[in-house]
Length: 204
Image (cartoon, rainbow, N blue to C red):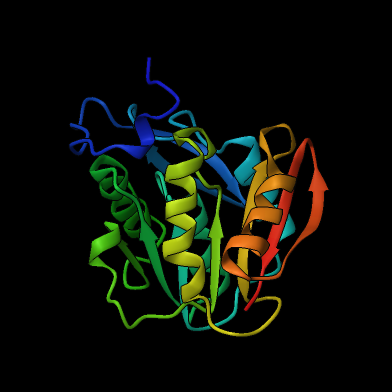
């Protein structure tokens, strides 16, 4: 059984025998996707990501970032809801990136979705929107380092752009919002609450 942090660390792509198809609902659209063990939410769509996809407005055009993409539910939804956008699906887990590419091809959005490691994103790219179910359980320092790297690369502007993150209420969503404002100087507010989760919105 995968540990809670398996999805954050590098893993080799799953073999054909390890991958399996599951039916999911991505913001009202039914789809068949490939999943595998050793990534975040290997059984399908987790509750937090479902809240994010249901609550966040359709993304703007431009470069979009799915930070900690897993098998790709956020990146795939971004691509389908913003057909003209370029979606960067970022993860350190090579198995997850392999699944994102397969799922993007399966759903017909392979040309839009770039599944890459963090260092493969060009330094000059800024993001019209960032959507994420961030890996809270990797620890505060690792999470803060991740957000310090990516949130400042948001393009100026409000909704539907900006950073949208879903965080479980009892895992420090409110304190994370306060930290982003204090440490990064980026306005962050609770956009909505649903099913024990907060959706935070960060703007520049």
